[in-house]
Structure formats: C-alpha cells, structure tokens
Image 1 (cartoon, one colour):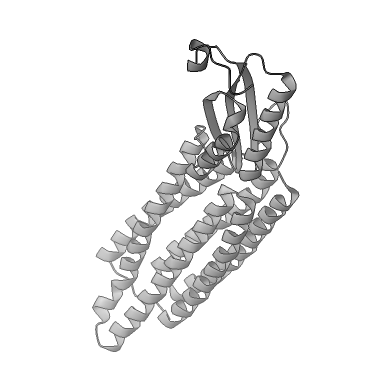
Image 2: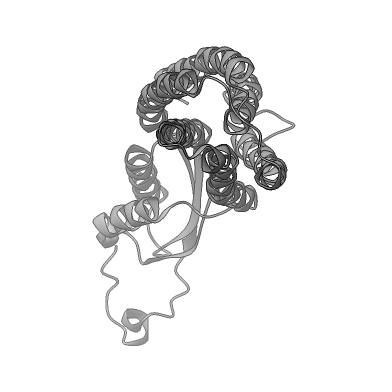
Length: 312
C-alpha cells in the first residue's frame, strides 16, 4: 500500500477518536443537566463510536502490515470486521433504547432545561458533520471501506443530533402554549424515532461487511476497468478465461488465464502479461494481479480452416 494512503487513514482515525472524546464529554454533561432519554440514546451512540475509534485505530495499523507467511494476502479484512462490530453494537443500542422509549411513553417523565439540550445537540451536530466531511475526504483518498464506514457513522450521528435538537424546540413550543402533558411525550418519541433510524443503516453496514468477508468480487467500476485493459490489448492474445476477483478491505485481487498462441515466444507472451498487469494496477488502486499464461488448444476457427494465426 502507498505510504500516503496509510497517512490518510491514520489522520481519519485520529480525528474520529478526538471528536468522539469531545462528543462523549458534551453529551454526558447534557444528560446530567437535561435528563433526556433521547440524549441518552445519542450518548450511547457516541460511546460506541469512541470504542470503535480506538479499535479502528489499532486495526488500521494491523491492516497496513504487509503479507507474511501466516497471512499470504495481508490483513486487509480486519477493516470489514470493524465495520461488522460497529453495525452489530449500534443495532443492540437501538433495540435497547427503543424498549426504554416505549416504557417512557407509558410513564413519561419531565426533562430539565430543554434549551440547554437544544444548544448541546446543535454543537454535536456541527461537530459530527464537520468530522464526517473530513473523514469522507480521507476515505476517498485512501480507498478504505472502514474509514468510509466511520464517515457514514459520523454523518448519521449528526442527523440524529439534529433531530433531537428539533424535538427540544418542539417541546419548548408546546410548554409555552400550555401543552405540558403532550410535551412530556416528545422526548420518548424522539428516542424511539432515533432508535428506528439507527437500526436500518447499521443493519446494512453489518450485512455488507459480512458479505465482503466472504470474498466478494470487486465493485462494478473495477470490473469494467479490467475489461477495458483486456480490450486495449486484444490484438496480443487469443482470449482470457476464469476471471476471478475478490476484495480484502481496501485491497483487491485479480487473477485470470491468458490464452496465447502455442508458438508465441516467451518474451512476447511475458510482455503482454506485463502490460496487462501494469494497466490493471494503474486503473485499480491497491490491486494485485496474477495472470497465468496457457497455450492455445488449437480449437479456434483459424486453426480449423487452416488459416494463419493473427496473433503471431
């Protein structure tokens, strides 16, 4: 992996770690002052984010280790493990907090200082969206799925904080208009809504990461790049077979068989393989390519009709 990619990933994980520390401190203080279930849900999300940031920091260091005798294809899949961990834990928090929200709907409790809760959520949302912008930027530069997942987490947390902030404004409005009983239900409703919003993207994140662990093929864009490189040198080989691709974190692996004329020189065949490998690696970052040359079986139309092979 290029050194600059590792640098981008380290920057993203450090920003994530420091922002999560600040978010946990702000939300913990707000929870004590406001006594809001919705803020408790938001705090739980940030607390999980903080733990995942620490795990992600050390996982990225492990993922950057080169391949060795024990792990011949490197340690890239550790990134998908981090994504699954984050998705599963967030689902657990959403389910636990949704049950608490239902209890509070049946037995509502008043919240204190809703205006403090609003300003806290506004600050949290701004911090989350700012962090998401930077982390997504680093994810694009590094090509890391784990960093991208962290950016999704930050963006989702920013939306949640904004929704909770809106609920405080709504609660203040109802209290000002003499609707105290209805205002008591706003906080558990907001907590339930946030929990429902949290479940869907968390499940998608965990599901996608799980299938990536099962050696999923590279994305469509990379597949098209492989075909583009093959078509660019189609006059140098007969055909290709058994094209296989897989991903391991941000690393991609491509292998296929290249069918060349039986009488072609080794040098010319090697030049073709070298051109294809370099072209695919240039078009697909963090990619390893394995091409196996095989001789033509002389079962093509040129051979059957006794015509000269056009590839010699």
